[in-house]
Length: 165
Image (cartoon, rainbow, N blue to C red; front, top):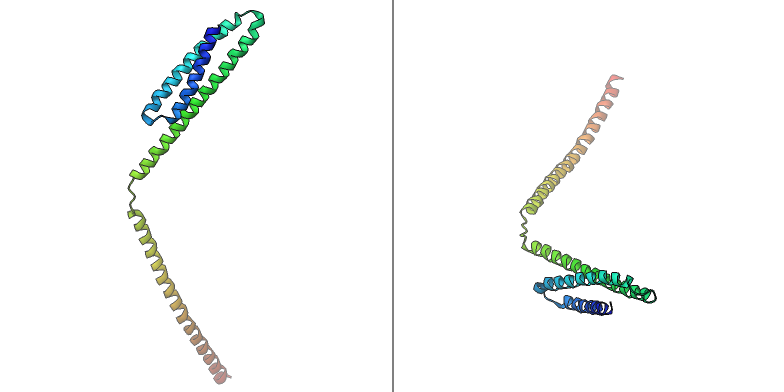
């Protein structure tokens, strides 16, 4: 059991050092390093299963200590597995962002649709300005017609009162 425990512990430390290489590796070799780390983690898990079996066969006075050491190794390996998954997720998100950026840069933007809409709005506003000027002119003319009508009405009323009474 002791030999397997030390071998597994050594593999855990190797995986930790590989995790450091993972951060500094280039894009092409990052997959190879990830696969190597995952293979080592799988090997460690199989060793841990054997260590659990062996720890249960230890004498009662050493059994508790052996199980504690195996549990500690399991805990360490689970953290390494989680760190690897987090790194893979960050790499995937980064690659996805780069693809989206490249797609945006490759897209050609044309102002044809926008230009047509601006012209339509300008024409509509031009028509509205023309209509507003016509309305204002008509209102100015209508004021004179109203005043003239009031004067004519007053004159007719004066004449009717003067001649018919």
